[in-house]
Amino acid sequence: MKYLIGILALSLLFFGCINTSEKACTQEAKLCSDGSYVGRTGPNCTFAACPQLVGNDSDAHGCKASAGYSWCESTQKCIRVWEENCTASAGIANPASVNCINHNGTLEIRDNGSGQVGYCKFLNGSECEEWAYFRGEC
Image (cartoon, rainbow, N blue to C red; front, side, top):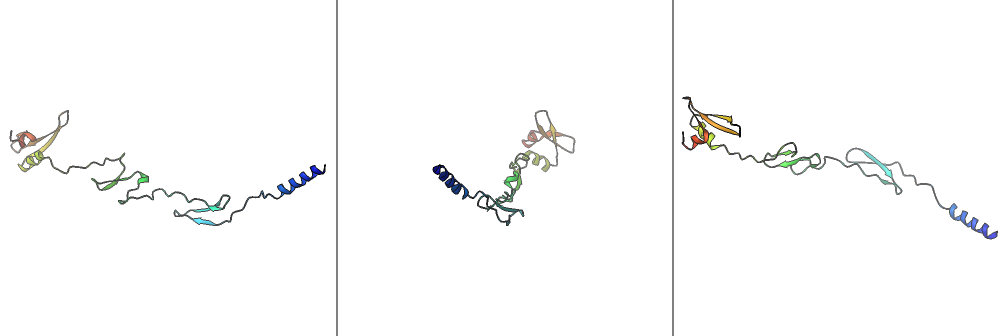
């Protein structure tokens, strides 16, 4: 019986000394870069993480990758590739069209079912396909 009372006394002594209360954190707040505040949390009372600032990832051209923008060299602007193609325009005029206009013709583009064809029309009412005119065939 003394043995049982001794074990009970030791158990009370051991378990009675364990601190089961949680540590209370101070009420300080940390100002985050987006203007919001976070408080202390967890067993060590460390500050909670600030929220991720979306859209703060501009590249050298000012394009925001998080919003889907990337730089298009040929158009010299930020674009979303699913909204707009980034294709380089050749910037070269059609020589047959230029030839027509340089010879006082009027250029007319017509659909022919499989694409478009340019015709050079003249003041006298005649006309010629622009490439045939360019080659001197009419």
